[in-house]
Image 1 (tube, rainbow, N blue to C red):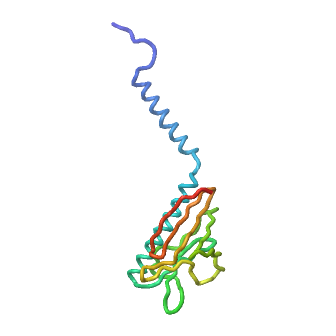
Image 2: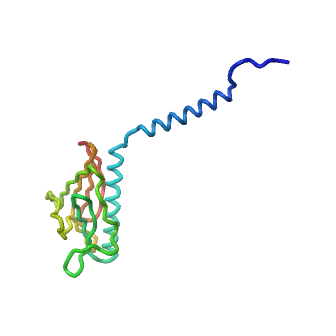
Length: 163
């Protein structure tokens, strides 16, 4: 009868290596910092999607909608009975900017400041005819920058920019 030598079997070694791989992957993922470019891209994608939805709603209405950007976030307004008001069926709910996000907007080539609190006017207009205010919205956070560009035909694109 043969005696078994001291040591580990190949299966035991493989199990240990697999467990070490899983633990090291978990540690690596938990210590890796958030990618500011990815978070900012999500914000830019969300705003572009909301603008697309708003333009679709304006065309389907037909009615006029507007994007109002403010220090805390953005939302949509609808033009009814001679004034701008919050629509009951907004294309997107009002959205708060993430902490640390800075924005700038240019409409028809002019830089616009954040409107005063309580201002009922949007900065970007989306008309029921399918036209829109040509705009450029720059979003910046933690050194990453994204630029949303919209033309008069309602076409929107996102550009990455170096700081």
